[in-house]
Length: 159
Image 1 (cartoon, rainbow, N blue to C red):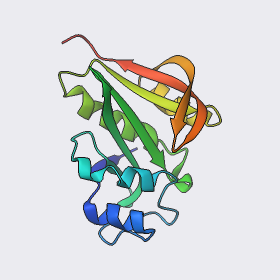
Image 2 (tube, one colour):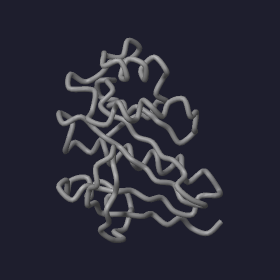
Image 3 (tube, rainbow, N blue to C red):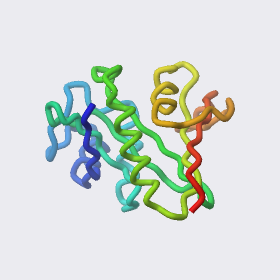
Image 4 (cartoon, rainbow, N blue to C red):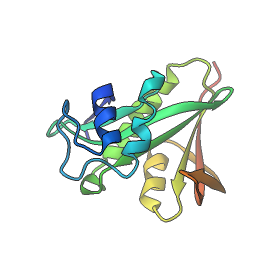
């Protein structure tokens, strides 16, 4: 699957926060994703780890978001979402692999962490195919709600 990661623009973020369709990009019919609004709030941070929109290169439309952030020394946590109409096409796995390539370029990163909801085994398969190993089941707070999730990690070679 061929995907591109493109930095989410302020115009896209503003539209998502206002509940309207982004004026500057072509998007899938069922975009935004369930996490788009939360991702849009991160645009002002200006991190080279995102957020990015995920572009399905076959038809050049945005189908989700992905990004990462430092959560501790040497540790980056990533998150992603793809609209339902594009599930099971390899898009999420390709996007996770692209983002991990970006993260690997940062010499201070020792490990990359991802959390997947217990009720979405497909998400677990995505990170597993991208090289992550299962660590444990934990409680995670997302938008004020506590969820049980699987924690995954990708350890990077010592540098």
